[in-house]
Image 1 (cartoon, rainbow, N blue to C red):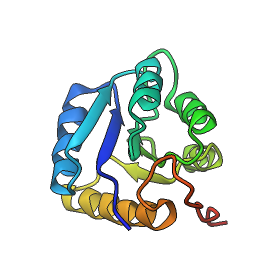
Image 2: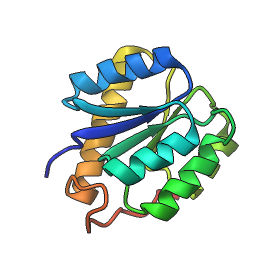
Image 3: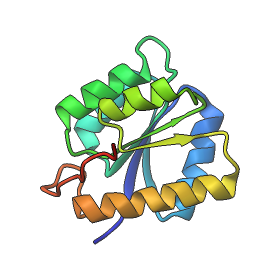
Length: 143
């Protein structure tokens, strides 16, 4: 089953967009949309239906967790990877409860980030058949 080929990056820091685009390109994702805040992210997700969303928690105006909840309500099967500097356990748990498929710390070394994204994309392909809003079933979150 194919891995994601399109992505939406949601982060308010321009240098993070550049960095994540470079990593995604190395993993075969060349079609990428960018949003620096939540409302734009919701519009782009509705319009383009990306195969995966990389979502920061700390966004201006509306928090990333609120955007996560809205994205999952509108697109329940759209894979969302939270990419944040926030490393508190309660934030990770809250993100998982709201439907985050993965949680990655963006300050990790490049090789570790690449490996985590690659593994996440493999898991996404396994449970979604590579389609963000397809009929694939997501396995239950680990307890």
